[in-house]
Image (tube, rainbow, N blue to C red; front, side):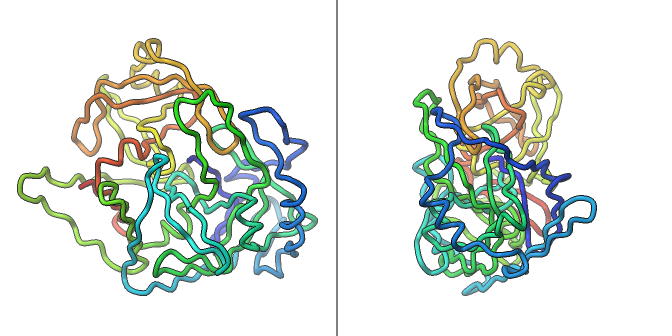
Length: 355
């Protein structure tokens, strides 16, 4: 899921510049498919555990742009690498995490999200502490479907199998989106996202083994370069860049053009293209023959057109008949396509390995 950043500890994030976050002025709605405010009881629970930023270890610099410095995130792995199973029944990898030692919650391992975010109901149940909005106001973050209000919070301890992550800054969502029933498929039912920074990109490597439904986190270990096995194709090495857009790779298309796409494990489809990119890669005829439907994500639902690309080139190899959709400003390669591989994000070498 494409989800903007608001804070990373201990890095500096410009809330107004880098994230284009805005103060929310009455963005709640009761219409199906659009965000609506959480019940007052949940908002009250979150408010009861709010504090000034310095009490939680945050610093807010209001000189020029608003910048938030979060407390340093800690990692306590049981070994050099920690593996745990994930479910894929909703189209993306979701692991069970223990939050503050209080509750277990499903969390989507989402390379398309810049930071970790929690549904407000989950944060309230886990007694997550938040920054008081009198000191730092609620912000709007942008998702695939639009925008939602969030506040900055702090998970004291998030446990993933044998890996404990402490002092994890998160976005706590103050709104939720009911489904309208008009979508291409099942909408997301998991509102908790484990994002790129600092947990994923802070690791040496992360492997999402889709066929075996296992995920491995390695905060310090070196990823051994995979080799070709008998009767199988050689693993693909796909260079990636980490930018403010996310983890990006280049894809090739039949008209000879190439375009950058964010690798988004939190997107359950295969390929999502902006209207501008469909024009660049010559997909106009395919789009005109496609069908329309709704896609649900952070910020609500929006209408998209589904179509098929004859082939797409990834890492120098062509893959035929890739299902795609358009209608947003995002360009994403999702779990719907990645699920045929054992995917390793080698952050030290900036290589995505596809086995």
